[in-house]
Image (cartoon, rainbow, N blue to C red; front, side, top):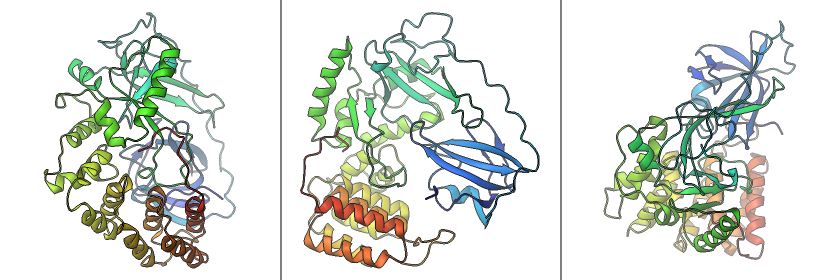
Length: 441
């Protein structure tokens, strides 16, 4: 089945509604029309690609999966209007211009990368494909928790070097020449020191996520390293990881962040806008059950960097169950996401929640989703509820019966949701087993 992202499908005419710029710096203006001939997701590079044919010339445009602006999962309707299908896309009316020559192959900087544990490499230093400006084995290199968007912050678990960088490259799909280059970005010293206190993480992107879903809902198994972790060799690194995995097996994500971060000061001046998420993460860590409810709900939104932390604080409130129910029943997708976030990591979910979820499944609208064949308008809401049921392992007889009935009702309306229900049923009907993965909570 062809890939779809939001309402977009290949071999359809589209109209651009808002200006945007892809990762290669190519800008497309509002009002332009094109044929969408290719669409996909690269899980290795965490990028979405769109193949657009404009004026007979085909070109691929790539966008970061975790970007906070521009075309991205959940926001394609803001940028593109779907038009008529193109059953037999015409051949280009003129030959595409030959691609520009690729940039020179990445080269290491002229000086030795001896490590910059307490300072930074010179700005725009080429690191090749490395992410940290040190000569240690790349097996020691880890991203900082919360890194997303156009800038990456990574650190070495051996020498402690911390580097902020930006990536450039080409996957070779159209040019035949795949390459990647990482170049350093200089931060104010006070910002560099402040970022060094955030945990390092190892994320298992290969882990199965049940079915294709919004990036806001995806959760990969993650191992957290305290910010001051140092390992002299790979053997000690393996020992440290085994120890951390055991310690974190019963901890939530919020607990892991609190346990491993070493940030004691508020965000410094000069924090670049692409790293603003760290300031929001800090703000979430300052929240308590008595904080203003508006602040708690704001930070608990799924797209907030501090969502897991704020949701855990809300679970300590006496009205936590009411806030979950209000969120899940809301017509606002953001409020639904807040209810989901609060409920998702509850170690002992309120027994009343199963009845609420059964009720909500019974009120789903089966109205067709515009521009998407075999899809209902409430697909997103249904998938969110199914994911919550699976995460909380709600295998009561009433829930199992409800899911079987729902699958029969969906059979003529939404094949994707039928598959989702089948996956959840298969998981709930299997004997409970211990989770051998790295802790995902």
